[in-house]
Image (cartoon, rainbow, N blue to C red; front, side, top):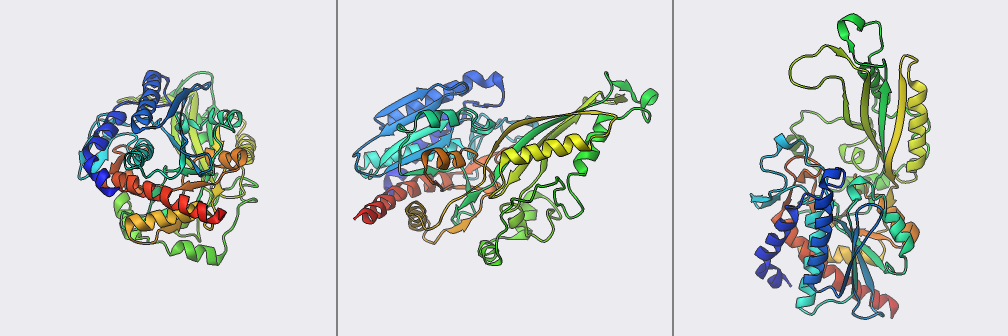
Length: 457
């Protein structure tokens, strides 16, 4: 298998580069044609890899690319999930090369979507191709590749509910997460949930001259900043009433197990260009980024932000706020608690509007399942050492819905690195990671088939 991958390395990379050139930004309507073009590209890639049946399934938003290859109804079925849409590339001036003109530098592929998730999704298509060409495919395979993950998977839930028979499988395999390092393989055993909200603070009925009205009329930007600042206390705990009441607290033993994962604080700060870390008191940096809930401002604007000066007291101010959630917290409840608290705390001098965007639930996957053990063995075979179980800090909202509607657990076997700058300028994905991911995925199918067959015997 490794020989086939190496023989086709340059073709695999060339095909990925072609995919990365298509600007499939789902959040911005101006990219609509490109997003639809990407769906067609993914469908064609599945067909060329040897998938027997492929189709583009329309939704009320962007379509889902579905593929199905059944070799024997009695054999286990793996459902592969990924997404072909990407984050907006802004700010463009911080990219060292254009975001949709992929380049390879220092053995890394630089482009928007290189890691999240085009590169990782494409590994599964190439792994399938390798298994077909070498006649080593041991399981039935289904592909479900969506185009709205970066905007909350708004229509995937309806698709799943309406297509349960079509999506029937034994396990879901996802590569949309990271591992610790190229020499420290790891598998995520959980993800945080998400509540994403936009707030608007409204003051006077028009922008005002700050010399004539400043000090006498509430400034919406000032008010918004004060309100946001009050959402955390001096220990960086979130002050929304009821926010922590459902949080699942880990035992000391569980925290010690997570602490066993390698982590270099000095290197962490050096990579980010910071002098000191910050976060909730009494928790380590890895814990703050995985097992604790968060509240962060993702964007804030209002007034005049152009070149030069304009002494204006703005009429409105806005912010986008995300809250990452941990097991037992519910996104709908947290969204409601935030809305109630934010509206209640607003001074009478302004009006406040809270608009929920999207959310998702936190998930934890068992480490004693056949799926996890197959992933563990595949990682060990590919990397030559045992993978470390970790908790992911990000969110894949649809994973909880998979479990609820399909009754299936997901295996989170990602090959990115936290340093790959996903969602940021200069996103990249290692050539090593791309090729090693293809190899490891093929091993997963072998181990999953063997372990599933043994369990049924």
